[in-house]
Figure 1 (spheres, rainbow, N blue to C red):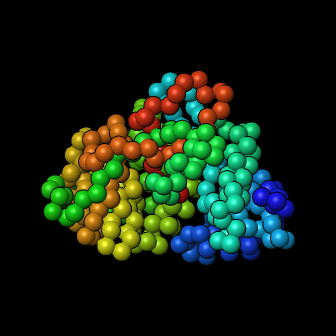
Figure 2: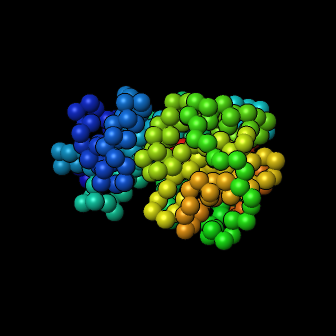
Figure 3: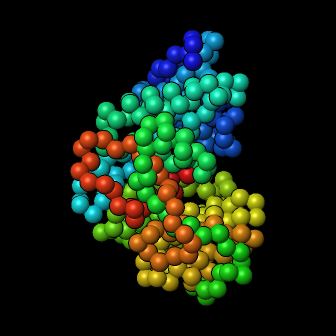
Length: 284
């Protein structure tokens, strides 16, 4: 890490930030610019500079409010899109950028959260900043023959604003993270790019994106226990060879539980967060 400087981003870094994001992820330039327009603000991105250029970057944004059973409203910061130039990997630079984000975000949030993109990355974040699981999901991987419910009325696409209202109503009284309309609007754009949608299913809801022959049901909320019929409605709208389905632990659903979101908790958090706290799907 000799001759590497960790610092907040500067306006002159913006083109390089787009290059790093493009190298590290599959998102379009339109999505990257939309994210920048909404969330790239002073002190909300930390970078590593080496050899006269930015070689690593990670973003910080206001995360959702979390409501554990105690009723304490917890503010969160969300760290996102850690990307390091391939020529500079393996030197601890990405770790240093992430630690700088945690230190900065910890000044104004109860919990600094991250959602690792791959299972192998959970250990990296736990080791880098002492992260612990703050939210779990129930996850299932199903073929079409395993979806045995009876489809309801046709699944209808709804706006991000309508999804926000229905999600809030379905989760009221449960431990969950509140995704605001602005954040859901950007996520809706991302889903549409991948051929998916936010859906109303006769009162229940689901957020769906497609990846080749896989349909990812990133959030399925069916509190009355009829998740099988709701999933069948999704499958009727989006035929696929494989379905990845995520549901909260406090609602019925298929599959097994696993950690989903990790967080570094501040001293003001009065009690451990429950495993069943539902985060959702934002910036997965």
